[in-house]
Image (cartoon, rainbow, N blue to C red; front, side):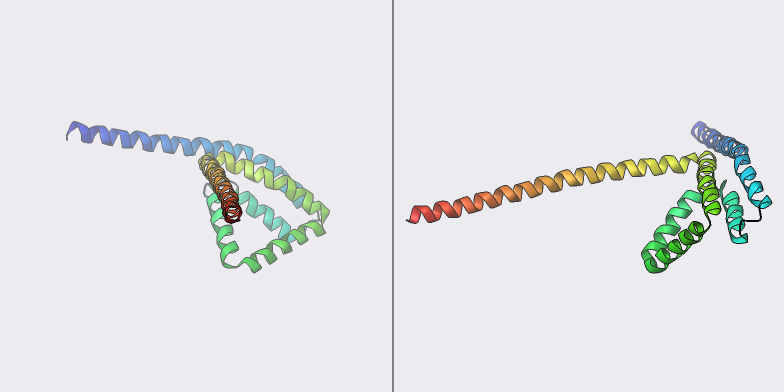
Length: 176
């Protein structure tokens, strides 16, 4: 074996160990944070005022809270549904919101559970939130530059229009 191949193998092994350790630490921290969601679900299970579909929703939120691919799958699924079947997407969203608003207790618990789920997922998969933040920042800079360039372009045409009309007025005045 050559020394460069040995260095490459050691580097790959080191990166693999770092990734494994990263996933172990984030999973452990997210599982510790999950107890808040467990306590909330226990309260809901003990109360008869909550519907079975709502309890199933909380169970799903509990299960999905530590999935490391939750953020990209939600973004991709939501974008796909919005683009391909916008009417059905809006109908399902509005139906879901109406069901939650019909029972104030369920709405209150959902408003507590959703931020907990996002916090747990942020701990379980911080890399997706970092990537999402970077993409958002790049898009913001792109839109800012686009708006600056667009504004300058509009100003150039406005100034050109004034110059054009001034030239026509000057030509008309000089003929007289």
